[in-house]
Length: 322
Image 1 (cartoon, rainbow, N blue to C red):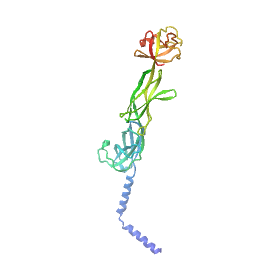
Image 2: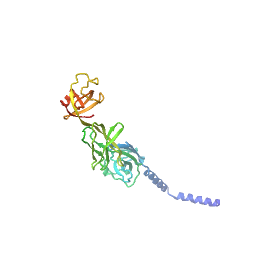
Image 3: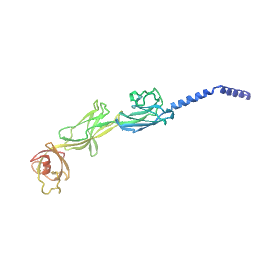
Image 4: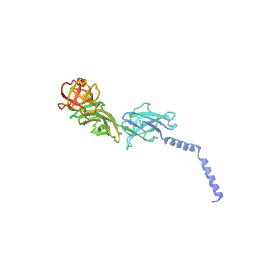
């Protein structure tokens, strides 16, 4: 290509560029800026990321200054689903920031979507929120929501041969979830009974314990796709077995070398052992402070204070925890 030909081409290009209106370049620049703003995602910070059913979760967020005055919508979806559901809405302020609070029932993902300029009242309920088909959205973040138990935390006194019955609820209510009743022993938590939740989340646990058993109790749920694991204390269990007893006045010395206010004599339990005793609808905690009895096949001798507290007289059958 000759120098004269190159010069002619350069002149032609310059002539074409000069003939294009400046407004066209301005329009091109405006479209590019708008697309960049529209493609700029919102950002959010969730606190806490691990929570329990229906506890408040706060979402703080920010976006570009161009999003000021837009409606930010908080959405949720369960793991593995593309079905996003609106939970709350907030207006992005002049600094590009927003804040919302919600309560969750299941684990899943949260995101915030820019729904454009505000066209509804400042206060709306989730079912009144109109979600656009598409719009700038924050990266989705996972939130773990633990299930929650409702169970009595009282002491459970069980007579040998009878069942321990424990009623409760696991929230949120989902039928078929497995709940375990567990008792604490020297090596950890031992599963005593299992049951499935009903349609309202209710469950009933039944356990037939051995005589003389004493344990702290809890209920446990291992977790599933919707909710993470949960445990809750469920009181303590004391199992009473029948035994023959008499009573005596321990005005003299004792084999253990001390006098307990509510004392009891036994042939083998270590001195100082605490024993729960039930009789005639009453119950007391007595301390082994003496040895005996050695007659009539009796296993316990109640001192005068213990016998009086129970309304016990002579020889009879009592219920004891050891």
